[in-house]
Length: 132
Image (cartoon, helix red, strand yellow):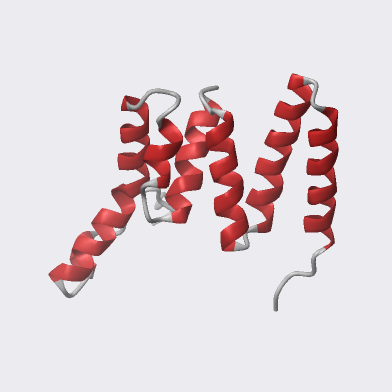
């Protein structure tokens, strides 16, 4: 079994779940980021943040926002949604990443006071002690 992969991007075989209900939950959760990304792709740039915000899964918010950002299609509203989501969940690293995106956008607009405010916020987040 030397050629067997240790990790796989495929979900586990669905027969390992003893109950049909658990299998359905896994399948729906695994497909959620894709469904959100597809719905956001059908929406216009202005409606994308609203479509993504309408979903209940915070991780799916960040995945969909990241996909739009990677394609260069992230609006300021979508970036703000990602910041708010990461902040609400207490996810420091995603919060710092999205605050950095906001900072670059502010600098690009020439809004130095906003960029300075974002740098201060990033410094505060960096100073926080991790929860045990």
